[in-house]
Length: 134
DNA sequence: GCCAACGTTGGC
DNA sequence: GCCAACGTTGGC
View 1: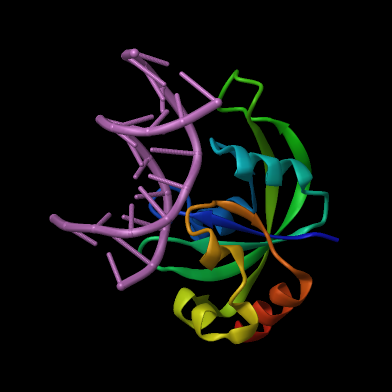
View 2: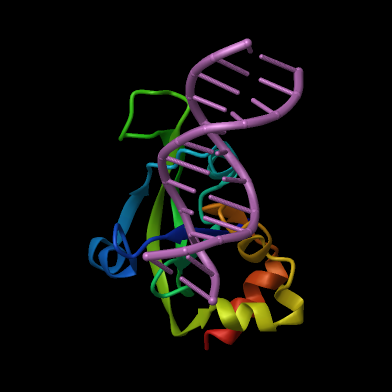
């Protein structure tokens, strides 16, 4: 089982839309490193959903329901999408500030690679964040 | 709104 | 293949 974190700007597609849609194509990624991570996602992997910009908080959990396929928003075969399904909303969002304050979370890519939009996350980091969200 | 970080493009 | 210029992302 893999664990991931994806970022979203709530102004373009946020958690509320995902809740409404139940599942969505995670497409439009145009960064090689992020794309490589998308390709490594497996069905049933758990994916934390982070809001950048105004919120700056991890707001919920999704699961992978379809592994990497051609990004439907382009004909360019370099880019892929995955399908993510709404799983669970955190009771309280875990803010970037909280994450920065946690010693055990000081290595997460969210902090170390600010601009990466799809990143792997360690199992114990994942569990820690979910615990903070209770 | 500003700016740092960093990815991409294009000239050489 | 290097590097300057430029564009974008995202935190503050």
